[in-house]
Length: 275
Ligand SMILES: NC(=O)c1ccc[n+]([C@@H]2O[C@H](COP(=O)([O-])OP(=O)(O)OC[C@H]3O[C@@H](n4cnc5c(N)ncnc54)[C@H](O)[C@@H]3O)[C@@H](O)[C@H]2O)c1
Image 1 (cartoon, protein in one colour):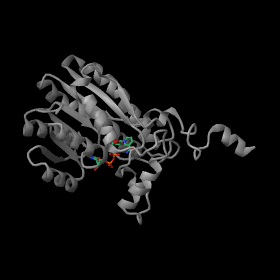
Image 2: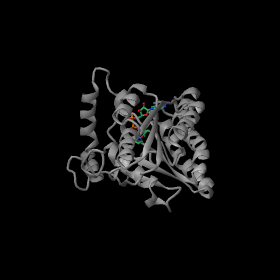
Image 3: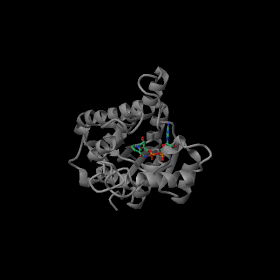
C-alpha cells in the first residue's frame, strides 16, 4: 500500500498505460482522479471503484480543462500528491517536408504543452501539500528516429527536457519531476493505423504478434510494465530521484535481437543477402 492516504491525478486514464497506472495506484491505496476525453470509458471505470476513483472529462489541449482537472481533484479529495501527465495520441503523421503549421501546433499542444500546463496547474496544489511527485510520459521516439512520426518524436523529446528543467525549478518545494520512456506497448494508440475493417480485438492480436518480436526481450510490452515504473517514480522509494527518465522498452534501444533470434537479420546477414 505505497500510496495509502495519497491522491494521484492521471491524464489519459481511460485506456492503455494510463488505465493500468490508475488500477495500480488504486490497488496500492491511493485515491485517483482521472482526466480523459473518453467520458464513457471513464465513467464505467468509476462505477467499478466507487469512492476511490473520480473522473473529470478533460481535453489536455485546453489550458482551462487542465486547470479544472487539478482544481477538481484537490477539492474532491483534499489535495494532490502525485500527477501522471500521460494523455496522448499519435499526432500529425507527415514528415518534416510535408507537415503544416497547424498540424505542428496541434501535436505540440497535445503532447508537449499539455505536460507543461499539467505541471503548471498541479504545482500550487502540490506546494500546498508540502511537496509531491510528477511523472510525465515521453517515449523511445524522444531518443532515436524511426519509432514515431516527426512531430510526435520532437514533442516527446521536449517532454524530457521539460522534465529536467521543471525538476530543477520545483525541487525547492519538495516536488520531484521525472519521465518514463515506453518502448512498444500494446495499447489502443495504434488502432487508427489499422484498416477500419479490422476490429479492436483483431488489432490487439496483430499488435501482440508484432510487439513480441520488436525488441530483445522475447514478449510484447504491456501497459503494466509502464505502470510499475510510474509507481516507482511516484513512490517514496524514489525520494532522491528527480529530473531523470526511466526507459522501459524491453531493450529496444540497445539494438536488434539479431544476436539470438534467427528471424532477425543482423548486419552481416544483410550484407551477405546483397552480395
Ligand atoms: N503504446 C506505446 O507503445 C507508447 C510508446 C511510447 C509512448 N506512449 C505514450 O503513452 C501515453 C499513453 O498512450 P497509450 O499507449 O496508453 O494509448 P491509449 O490510446 O491506450 O490511451 C491514451 C488515452 O489518452 C486519451 N486522450 C487522447 N487524447 C486526449 C486529449 N486530448 N485529452 C485527454 N485525453 C486524451 C485517450 O482517450 C486514451 O484514454 C501517450 O502519451 C503515448 O504517446 C505510448
